[in-house]
Structures are given as structure tokens and as C-alpha cells.
Image (tube, rainbow, N blue to C red; front, side, top):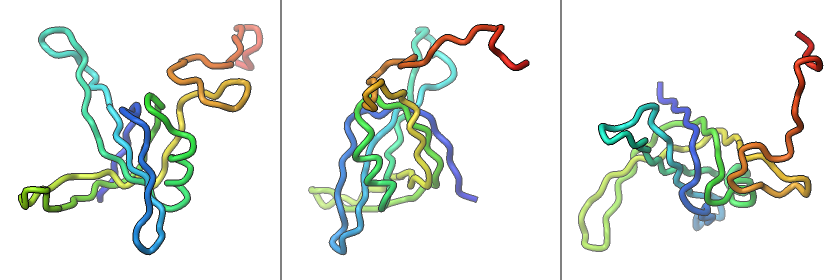
Amino acid sequence: MNKIILIGNLTKDPEASSTQSGVNFTRFTIAVNRPFTNAAGEREADYFDIIAWRQLAERCAKYLFKGSKVGINGSVQRRQYEDRDGIKRTTFDVVADEVEFLTPKSNNGQPHGNSAVGDMQPVYDDDLPF
């Protein structure tokens, strides 16, 4: 079974492109914080290269930007290529099956950037149904 679930933030704006046959794809990288700190008390992150295809790629290219928080559900794919110097390299990509946009939107429908609260309204205990 090859499944991976990640939640992280984009490290830069996504890069949209298409294959020679016209299939759209979008690449982006997310940083996923580790749940612990290192010996110096600093939180470290792991970086994952993500690729989305077809309509999902179009939505990612349109709505995501550097700093966006996303949830990714996908699989890991090994890719080999030859670099400019002719050296064979191996890398691992996460092929996204689902991308959940976790950054809140503002009142005009545009993403807030790094806002954690956005346009949410406070909820008081008396308003809760339980």
C-alpha cells in the first residue's frame, strides 16, 4: 500500500505547466513541521515535492500561493533523471490525489495569506448545541 497524508505550508508559489500532449500539471513544495524540537530547542521541518495533475493541478495553480496551508492525500513516486552534468539522480515526489485548501478566505473571496483566524466569528458557550 502506497499512501501518504501531509499537512504543511507552500514554500513558494506553485509552478503550472503541461506535458507535450497537453495534460496540465502543477508542482509545489510544502514544509511539514516535525512534532518535536531539536537539541537547540528549534522546530525543524521536512520538505516534500508535490505534483498534481489535470483539474486538480488547475485549481492548485489558481488558488495556492507561498505560505498557503494545505492537506495532501496521495502516494509516493520515485523518479529518475539525468542532471546537466550527466549524473543520474533519483528523487521522490508525492502525487496528490486530493489537496485540501486550509488557508481561510477573506470577505472578498481571496485568501488571507498567513492569517490563522480569517473572517471567523466568535462562538460563545451558550450557542453550542451540546
